[in-house]
Length: 242
Image (tube, rainbow, N blue to C red; front, side, top):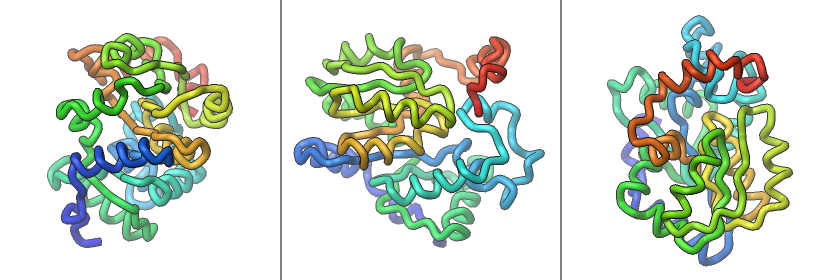
């Protein structure tokens, strides 16, 4: 794939696809292959292990891990829309993403820009989607996000903590007890894996929301400060990143 950017669909089209899935009660998943996911996909092939940053375990996985890689590849093939890097000088992630797509022969159904979650918020589409809908919030900050989504008019029917890759099965099992239309998932790398599973298993909408949940809770959110505090609090010893 020489330049996948020419195949990006617009934010308006992504929104339209979600609305159509909601109205027809069909599953739909939107995921993002950001810095962490790209490193997981490329580790020990395009990226040496000594190049993996110290903070990656905050994103919910510990490398090396072939199972996580294969789950991510599968998720990219199952997802209805996949957000990908687009800026050539954004570290090396645009070129690396092209190499990964070619190496693993991954051909997503639809692709869009990596900042899709932020665009859905900025254009008011997220509020239109969740207003009057039953919403489940998934991630470390899910409890703090209840107030934000309630102000948008969402009917928050579930709050689930997804700490790391290891507890994806537990969260899927707990979702069986939830009544929801949309799952908003901010859980690092595991979010990209669980969203297609939610869409296929429950025939619901699942959106990989990234750090937008943090930003909606606190506009002054500083990701590196939060990561350092997470490690200092001993979360890694609790198995959070395994």
